[in-house]
Image (cartoon, rainbow, N blue to C red; front, side, top):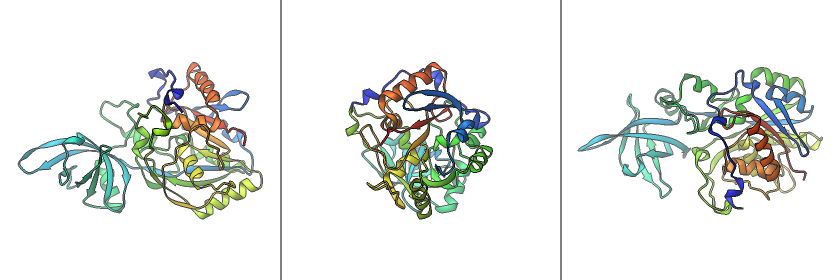
Length: 350
């Protein structure tokens, strides 16, 4: 499909700079096949049934933006900005760098306090391979000490992410370290809302998909067929797959919280609609014409024009329906993107 088909006018003031307080006070647009309904996130327990299953992404955002200096013998230090986007095992990461063109293989990068990395490679895509001087828990601790929460470019901060963002840009159930962008649909949940869902008899399970910085990148191709997604690592434990399949076998609906949970579930589902355990990378790109086999309902934030995320929700609920829903959201003052409001989408009937 033409990428232009997913374009729309979004006023800059519709992009949220801060989240709603409390989190579940955010607005929720219920997008049904025949109507739109304006609700709030705290209404969610009224919109699910006992026996339904909610699937969340429990990946935790790491402070993936680093500022440091390139050190090269005989040359003055050069200020650099690094945005990690994919773990490659041990001390190795791939990253976007500024100014990337001035880095060479073998350059040393110093982030302060003895925390360093070496440029181990460069790709044609413009990113670099880094080899840090530590790994595992020691690397995470160094990132916590020297890194910054990697807010998307649509959230302006004069001096970068602040102390509020350290809390706001993390779900309350985040557990598995590894994302460099938040699975933002989950930012609306509070312990109180989760307790009300539990009391309703809704089962909640967690998958993991470590979100990469590729989610920030614009679609530069003119046709969706020519766009290449960045691979991201995720896992669906056997007990989670069993719980999902058991719920659906008895009539429960599967509500995915976010496009990340949706993508890994649709990666792992077979043609019969059975979700299989999974561990590995996925680069699945969901566009109109795709037949969803796992996810019945999708809770997700409002996305930017011509983004892969708007393409996904258009595949899930229909392009015309989502164009109407977004026009309504803009007219009614809904807030967009990471810190914005939410929507609950009913999928196209199978």
